[in-house]
Structures are given as C-alpha cells and as structure tokens.
Length: 206
Image (cartoon, rainbow, N blue to C red; front, side, top):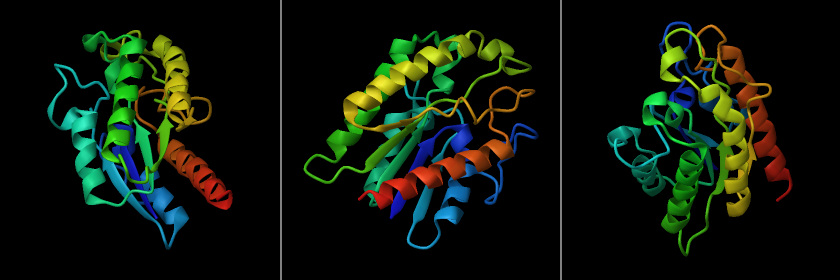
C-alpha cells in the first residue's frame, strides 16, 4: 500500500531548534512508514513554503496543485495525506479563511478529476497546527493564530462535502512555543502515532 504525504515544511520535517531537517527517525512521514512496516510505502512529498492557493503571486514549487499531479502520475497512491494551509496564512498574502478553504476545495476537485474513471485514493486532510506569533514569525504571521479555529471549521466542511477524512491536530500536536511554527520532535512522534492508529483502524473496517 502506497501512502503519499503531500505538504509543507511540517511534512518535510523542519526542526524548530536549528532549521535543519529532522532525520528518518524523527519526522512524522518517515516514522509512519517505520510504524506501518512491511507492505507499506510512505512517499514523502513535503516542501517548505508550499501553499494551497494557486493564484498569483503563488507559483513554482510552492504551488500545491501543480506539484501534486506529478506524484499522482508517478505512483499508484492508495492513501493521500495532505498537510497544507499554514503558509497561506502569511500576513503579506492577506487571504481570508474562505480563500484558503476554497483553495483546498479546488485541490480536492483536481485530485478527483485526475482519477476520473479510476479508483480514487483515500484522502486525509490534516489541519494546520496552531501558530504562535512569536520571534521571527510574529510579523510574518500576524493575525494568523486567530484565523486557525475558523479555518479548521471551514476545512472540516470542505472535507465533509467531498467525503474526505479531516484530522484536527491542534489540540494535542503543537509547534514549538518558542519558535512558533514548526512541530517539535515529540509532536512528530505523536502525529505519526495518531496516523498509524487511524490507518490501521481503516484497514480493519474494510
């Protein structure tokens, strides 16, 4: 079974301590693969600064829709885990919650169109984590923390409309409070554990 993890820097595994990438035994997609074991391939497709929104000024490898399709063509994907939306909250983009939720809706529609007349992978959407407006991110993400609860509700509705699984990670899986944006190594472990449980539960109900 192939599981594609498509997301931003928290999927890529940026450490809030030194800005480097967590190793294979620390970042959640790799840990998920280790937990699942034989018979599963976890494909890591995280990219720092990746967004959901696909209108200018969003382009290049930061654009979600454009860079997901090559992965869908290259692999037989059974489960697609999406972790996006954080970068869309940057103050300079001035996006509303509706803008970001509509971008998620568009991404899911694009995925469904790609699999027209073929079996659609199971789609799981992870919420953006909390954002602490501190340090270097205080200005960049000014106002973002207040938008998170509203965005979670909007994402949940989009996922419900499309029959996708929505996972709110904000309660128990948090970024570093001192750095503000990136998940701690402990949070990566917790997320891998939660996803492992959900995937195994889904398999048992088939």
